[in-house]
Image (cartoon, rainbow, N blue to C red):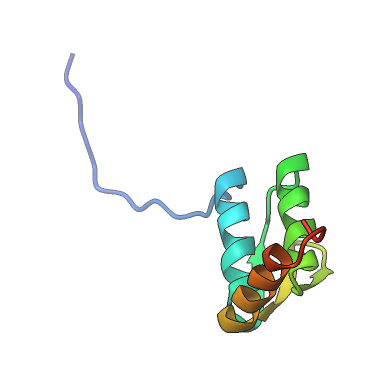
Length: 93
């Protein structure tokens, strides 16, 4: 049996499934950043929603659209101060 191979072109696009760990990392980075960030096709799970609520508690603002989450970050310095204050005041954690 002879096999003939001819050159050809392959075109297309695929959507790779979202990752829980990537979604959580993106949430934390977006919260620490200054300004707006968009996380496209986040994985929605109990863990990622828990992380989202934690980011909101630290001051990040969240908006949900059809295929992305938009986060307004609080900038790292402000967030660090907020965390220090939360742990420095008795009864706040």
